[in-house]
Image 1 (cartoon, rainbow, N blue to C red):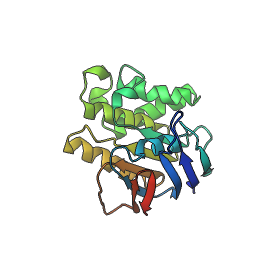
Image 2: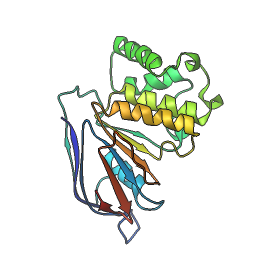
Image 3: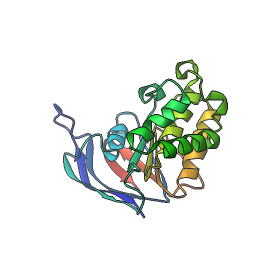
Image 4: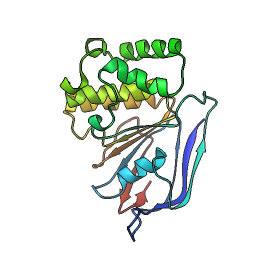
Length: 212
Protein backbone atom coordinates (compact mmCIF):
# COMPACT_ATOMS: atom_id res chain seq x y z
CA UNK A 1 0.00 0.00 0.00
CA UNK A 2 1.25 3.47 -0.92
CA UNK A 3 0.78 6.54 1.26
CA UNK A 4 1.47 10.27 1.34
CA UNK A 5 1.89 11.65 4.86
CA UNK A 6 2.18 15.28 5.91
CA UNK A 7 3.91 15.72 9.25
CA UNK A 8 3.47 19.21 10.76
CA UNK A 9 3.87 20.81 7.33
CA UNK A 10 3.82 24.57 6.83
CA UNK A 11 4.49 26.56 3.69
CA UNK A 12 5.28 30.23 3.11
CA UNK A 13 5.61 31.69 -0.37
CA UNK A 14 8.84 33.55 -1.11
CA UNK A 15 8.47 37.21 -0.19
CA UNK A 16 5.54 36.60 2.17
CA UNK A 17 5.72 36.91 5.94
CA UNK A 18 2.69 34.73 6.62
CA UNK A 19 2.43 30.99 5.94
CA UNK A 20 -0.29 29.90 3.54
CA UNK A 21 -0.30 26.39 5.07
CA UNK A 22 0.05 25.90 8.82
CA UNK A 23 1.11 22.74 10.67
CA UNK A 24 -0.79 20.27 8.51
CA UNK A 25 -0.98 16.62 9.50
CA UNK A 26 -2.80 14.02 7.46
CA UNK A 27 -2.25 10.84 5.49
CA UNK A 28 -3.62 9.76 2.12
CA UNK A 29 -3.40 6.05 1.34
CA UNK A 30 -4.10 3.95 -1.73
CA UNK A 31 -7.75 2.92 -1.93
CA UNK A 32 -8.96 6.18 -0.38
CA UNK A 33 -11.13 8.87 -1.95
CA UNK A 34 -10.81 11.99 0.18
CA UNK A 35 -12.49 15.35 -0.31
CA UNK A 36 -10.75 18.56 0.77
CA UNK A 37 -12.85 21.71 0.64
CA UNK A 38 -12.21 25.33 1.43
CA UNK A 39 -12.88 28.84 0.23
CA UNK A 40 -10.70 30.59 -2.34
CA UNK A 41 -7.45 31.67 -0.74
CA UNK A 42 -7.53 28.96 1.93
CA UNK A 43 -4.37 27.29 0.56
CA UNK A 44 -5.94 24.42 -1.40
CA UNK A 45 -3.91 24.87 -4.59
CA UNK A 46 -0.69 25.35 -2.63
CA UNK A 47 -1.37 22.06 -0.86
CA UNK A 48 -2.00 20.35 -4.21
CA UNK A 49 1.31 21.65 -5.56
CA UNK A 50 3.12 20.53 -2.42
CA UNK A 51 1.70 17.00 -2.60
CA UNK A 52 2.63 16.85 -6.29
CA UNK A 53 6.22 17.81 -5.52
CA UNK A 54 6.06 21.17 -7.30
CA UNK A 55 7.02 23.00 -4.10
CA UNK A 56 8.72 21.80 -0.92
CA UNK A 57 7.51 22.39 2.66
CA UNK A 58 8.96 25.40 4.45
CA UNK A 59 8.90 23.27 7.59
CA UNK A 60 7.75 19.78 8.49
CA UNK A 61 8.03 16.80 6.16
CA UNK A 62 6.21 14.99 3.37
CA UNK A 63 6.76 11.25 3.72
CA UNK A 64 6.17 9.03 0.69
CA UNK A 65 5.68 5.31 1.00
CA UNK A 66 5.32 3.52 -2.32
CA UNK A 67 3.82 0.20 -3.26
CA UNK A 68 5.69 -2.41 -5.25
CA UNK A 69 4.74 -0.76 -8.54
CA UNK A 70 7.30 0.04 -11.22
CA UNK A 71 9.56 3.04 -10.71
CA UNK A 72 8.36 4.16 -14.14
CA UNK A 73 5.02 5.08 -12.58
CA UNK A 74 4.86 8.64 -11.23
CA UNK A 75 4.00 9.09 -7.57
CA UNK A 76 1.39 11.81 -8.04
CA UNK A 77 -0.76 12.90 -10.97
CA UNK A 78 -2.23 16.41 -10.66
CA UNK A 79 -5.28 17.59 -12.62
CA UNK A 80 -5.76 21.34 -12.36
CA UNK A 81 -8.68 23.65 -13.02
CA UNK A 82 -7.70 24.82 -16.50
CA UNK A 83 -6.96 21.98 -18.94
CA UNK A 84 -5.20 24.37 -21.33
CA UNK A 85 -2.45 24.91 -18.74
CA UNK A 86 -1.56 21.21 -18.87
CA UNK A 87 -1.92 20.40 -22.55
CA UNK A 88 1.40 19.50 -24.18
CA UNK A 89 0.37 18.14 -27.58
CA UNK A 90 -1.91 18.80 -30.54
CA UNK A 91 -4.38 15.91 -30.24
CA UNK A 92 -5.56 13.24 -27.81
CA UNK A 93 -3.31 10.48 -29.07
CA UNK A 94 -0.18 12.65 -28.83
CA UNK A 95 -1.25 14.03 -25.44
CA UNK A 96 -1.53 10.54 -23.96
CA UNK A 97 1.73 9.41 -25.55
CA UNK A 98 3.64 12.50 -24.38
CA UNK A 99 3.54 11.59 -20.70
CA UNK A 100 4.39 7.96 -21.39
CA UNK A 101 7.38 8.96 -23.51
CA UNK A 102 8.65 11.10 -20.65
CA UNK A 103 8.49 8.08 -18.36
CA UNK A 104 11.01 6.38 -20.68
CA UNK A 105 8.70 3.52 -21.66
CA UNK A 106 9.49 1.55 -24.79
CA UNK A 107 7.48 2.11 -27.95
CA UNK A 108 5.50 -1.12 -27.72
CA UNK A 109 4.38 -0.30 -24.17
CA UNK A 110 3.46 3.24 -25.18
CA UNK A 111 1.37 2.02 -28.11
CA UNK A 112 -0.42 -0.51 -25.91
CA UNK A 113 -1.24 2.05 -23.22
CA UNK A 114 -2.37 4.67 -25.73
CA UNK A 115 -4.76 2.19 -27.37
CA UNK A 116 -6.08 0.99 -24.03
CA UNK A 117 -6.60 4.54 -22.76
CA UNK A 118 -8.33 5.68 -25.94
CA UNK A 119 -10.76 2.78 -25.57
CA UNK A 120 -11.19 3.16 -21.80
CA UNK A 121 -12.04 6.86 -22.03
CA UNK A 122 -14.10 6.50 -25.23
CA UNK A 123 -11.87 8.93 -27.13
CA UNK A 124 -11.89 7.25 -30.55
CA UNK A 125 -13.91 10.05 -32.13
CA UNK A 126 -11.61 12.70 -30.63
CA UNK A 127 -8.36 10.82 -31.19
CA UNK A 128 -6.97 13.13 -33.88
CA UNK A 129 -9.09 16.22 -33.24
CA UNK A 130 -7.16 19.45 -32.63
CA UNK A 131 -7.35 20.05 -28.88
CA UNK A 132 -7.81 23.80 -29.30
CA UNK A 133 -11.12 23.14 -31.09
CA UNK A 134 -12.63 21.06 -28.26
CA UNK A 135 -14.77 22.07 -25.30
CA UNK A 136 -13.35 22.47 -21.79
CA UNK A 137 -15.00 19.19 -20.79
CA UNK A 138 -13.47 17.28 -23.68
CA UNK A 139 -10.01 18.73 -23.04
CA UNK A 140 -10.22 18.05 -19.30
CA UNK A 141 -11.18 14.45 -20.03
CA UNK A 142 -8.18 14.05 -22.35
CA UNK A 143 -5.76 15.53 -19.81
CA UNK A 144 -7.18 13.23 -17.13
CA UNK A 145 -6.83 10.26 -19.48
CA UNK A 146 -3.17 11.16 -20.12
CA UNK A 147 -2.51 11.32 -16.37
CA UNK A 148 -4.19 8.00 -15.60
CA UNK A 149 -2.36 6.34 -18.52
CA UNK A 150 0.85 6.93 -16.53
CA UNK A 151 -0.65 4.99 -13.58
CA UNK A 152 0.29 7.32 -10.70
CA UNK A 153 0.03 6.07 -7.11
CA UNK A 154 -2.03 9.15 -6.25
CA UNK A 155 -4.41 11.36 -8.20
CA UNK A 156 -5.08 14.92 -7.04
CA UNK A 157 -7.86 16.93 -8.66
CA UNK A 158 -7.59 20.64 -7.84
CA UNK A 159 -10.94 22.29 -8.65
CA UNK A 160 -10.88 20.11 -11.76
CA UNK A 161 -14.58 20.55 -12.53
CA UNK A 162 -14.91 24.25 -11.72
CA UNK A 163 -15.42 25.27 -15.37
CA UNK A 164 -17.38 22.19 -16.47
CA UNK A 165 -21.12 21.70 -16.90
CA UNK A 166 -22.79 19.11 -14.62
CA UNK A 167 -22.56 16.27 -17.15
CA UNK A 168 -18.81 16.65 -17.64
CA UNK A 169 -18.26 17.25 -13.92
CA UNK A 170 -20.08 14.03 -13.08
CA UNK A 171 -18.04 12.13 -15.65
CA UNK A 172 -14.76 13.37 -14.15
CA UNK A 173 -16.00 12.48 -10.65
CA UNK A 174 -16.96 8.97 -11.79
CA UNK A 175 -13.49 8.39 -13.26
CA UNK A 176 -11.78 9.66 -10.10
CA UNK A 177 -14.02 7.49 -7.95
CA UNK A 178 -13.23 4.42 -10.03
CA UNK A 179 -9.49 5.13 -9.94
CA UNK A 180 -9.58 5.28 -6.13
CA UNK A 181 -10.23 1.53 -6.02
CA UNK A 182 -6.46 0.97 -6.20
CA UNK A 183 -4.90 4.43 -5.89
CA UNK A 184 -5.26 7.30 -3.44
CA UNK A 185 -7.43 10.16 -4.72
CA UNK A 186 -7.75 13.66 -3.26
CA UNK A 187 -10.65 15.72 -4.64
CA UNK A 188 -10.16 19.44 -3.90
CA UNK A 189 -13.13 21.76 -4.17
CA UNK A 190 -14.36 25.15 -2.99
CA UNK A 191 -17.62 23.79 -1.60
CA UNK A 192 -18.46 21.13 0.93
CA UNK A 193 -19.65 17.90 -0.61
CA UNK A 194 -20.37 14.32 0.36
CA UNK A 195 -20.53 11.13 -1.64
CA UNK A 196 -21.17 7.54 -0.69
CA UNK A 197 -17.67 6.40 -1.71
CA UNK A 198 -15.85 9.20 0.09
CA UNK A 199 -13.46 7.99 2.78
CA UNK A 200 -13.05 11.37 4.48
CA UNK A 201 -14.09 15.00 4.06
CA UNK A 202 -11.58 17.59 5.31
CA UNK A 203 -11.96 21.35 5.64
CA UNK A 204 -9.05 23.71 4.98
CA UNK A 205 -9.56 27.17 6.47
CA UNK A 206 -6.89 29.88 6.33
CA UNK A 207 -4.23 27.23 5.73
CA UNK A 208 -5.28 25.04 8.66
CA UNK A 209 -7.13 21.73 8.69
CA UNK A 210 -9.97 22.31 11.11
CA UNK A 211 -11.97 19.11 10.52
CA UNK A 212 -10.82 15.66 9.50
